[in-house]
Amino acid sequence: MTNIARIGQGYDLHRLESGRKLILAGVEIEFEQGLSGHSDADVVLHSVIDALLGAAGLGDIGELFPDTDPAYKDIASTDLLEQVRQKVEQFGYKPVNVDLTVIAEKPKLQPYKSVLRRKLAELLKIDFDAVSVKAKTNEGIGELGTGRAIACHAVVSLAEIIIT
Image 1 (cartoon, rainbow, N blue to C red):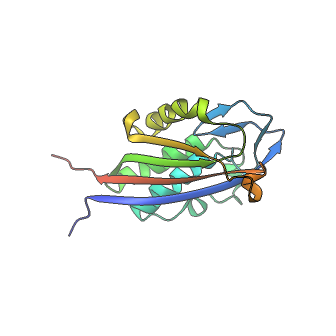
Image 2: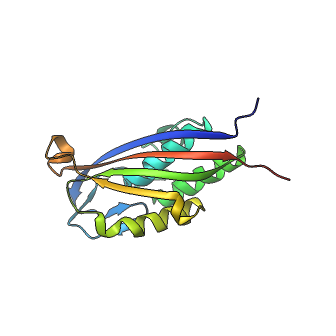
């Protein structure tokens, strides 16, 4: 029996720190802090990567791109996503849609949602209307709520590539 549709879920969280650019979905967001991490720490793309890998049954981001490997130091997550997108396609699947929830007390992401959607659609090679980006706060609770971190939840659906 062949699975025609698959669904994957991803999550990522990084602390904010001074001296770094804030990159979300491959887009630079104007803010006084950026996300701390081995790569550019793009929580949006990291959660999408994990969702893609999960849907295709191919492991997780840490297995493919370990933070102990100097090759990935400060790498753009757009490059990682492209590698994963190609890998998923080699296994016979293509992204159909993505639904994201970004959790950030600050900066306010409402003005960026359309830009983030457009960039994700471009990176995943899917239609703009197949990308949903929601921005939430954590209501002042925990690391997220006090504005010391940003997190993202992603759900991705894949369809089997049918060659006729």
